[in-house]
Image (cartoon, rainbow, N blue to C red):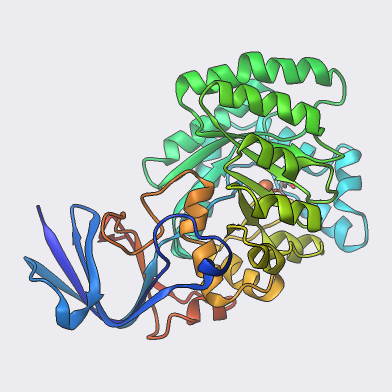
Length: 399
Ligand code: NIG
Ligand code: FE
């Protein structure tokens, strides 16, 4: 067993392990002049340097702050083509939903992705995931959802599987938009063919559905997610992005791991989330890029919900290639405190993926952590557009 004691840490800052809800999200522990003991990729001890146990080797981290590796619980990092024309149209006033209704938007990314091989998808996604990791994300979720047909969905998930050799990724099957005709048949085939095939091959840990006027109804979502749960997969939803049509209430009823977006959530949805174990994942990059209202992050925490933050990295609604920037936006746009934002991007993001072994600097957790460039950890929520992250450590090793 090789042990390393990391020393000369100006501040070690961490939430407690496990999902934190309500006021507890603000309770981060700050240990000044700290040390961190790691053995076999796992944290064994954390505390003041003066009390540190002996270890075989020591590594001086140079007097900077250390925080847990960030976890990005919501990305669409695999896609082909671009959405630059959509972007220009939206900036001149055409709404996102209108572009989608006319066969553009998500559907244009589906056409481009359908034409790409697994190898091409891997080549396109690799630098995006490298950018997320350089920004501090030691684990990221990646969704499918740009498949025109089931083969293309499976190709996207195979691309994620190939990239798992280089990155810590959690794959999700996303049922994104229905075909223009034959949607009942499509939902049946998703439940009877696609979900069983994905479960059999272990290609995804969860199934996500976009529940929205321009996508799937609440009833269609319920059928799909029940099929997912019947095959041992977790449930997730994109809901309340434009209209609160009942997706959040369904997520809570089904015991979904998370419900994501929530820009259109009101008091009823906030109360439902506060009374459930479903994580409320907010995506402030979408607020900035689409000019949508911000999700009610402050109200969700005040009501007692567990809130996570992600980039939603995708070509249409959030070309945000930095998990640290998503954290920083959550503070400005959704009124989280810096400590709440750290909790949202670490242990709560882990909970949104069903993971309990990471996100906190505490004995028994994976030794995934970041050294910052400065001595005060608040550079992490403060800095916009330059990286406050100096080095990324995965299982105790600098990348
Ligand atoms: O999370 N709204 C649904 N899906 C994605 C956007 C996908 C796209 O525009 O390509 C989202 O915002
Ligand atoms: Fe999304």
